[in-house]
Amino acid sequence: MKKVLFVSARNSCRSLLAESIVNHHYQGSLKAYSAGVEPGEMHPATARVLKEIGLPLSKQAANSPEDFQGEQFDYVITLCNPAREACPLFWTTGEAIYEHMEVNDPIVASSEEKTLQRCRDARDTLEERLMAFFDREIKRTAIPTPAEGHRGWVT
Image 1 (cartoon, one colour):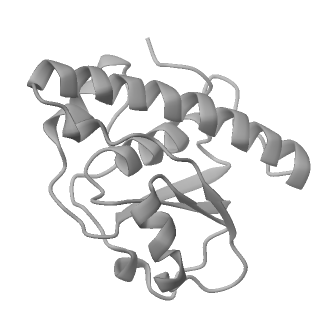
Image 2 (cartoon, helix red, strand yellow; image 1 turned 45 degrees about the horizontal axis):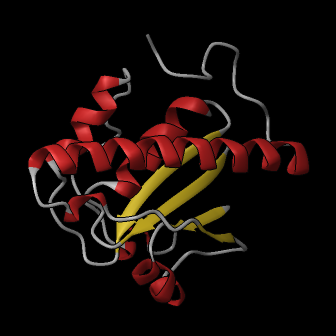
């Protein structure tokens, strides 16, 4: 099973969304983890927008890249510029494919409703981009495909 590390600024929304999406869609093929350059608290909207589509939150606590010191990842995917700039600090062993997928920070909105909508937008953007990326990677590298029934939102 290939391992993926998603890195964002705080590990409070974007990277947690990405981790949960990949762990759901690619169960049995990929195992995703997440970290924040400056870890903060998980934003409540993160769990809410995942629950809306039937996905569980993979974890509750924020991690930093240091928490994965010595781990080997096949992919390290940054989700914002601060994470991309900090990439040389990651202590991953072996050869990892580094990819950058800029996703706007949904937690900067001025109201709770706007934050919730921006989290939904981030969730949907991440799902679309990650599915396209890993579907290509599965074809390119012969990653075992996920079991039938694990693609798409849970209803």
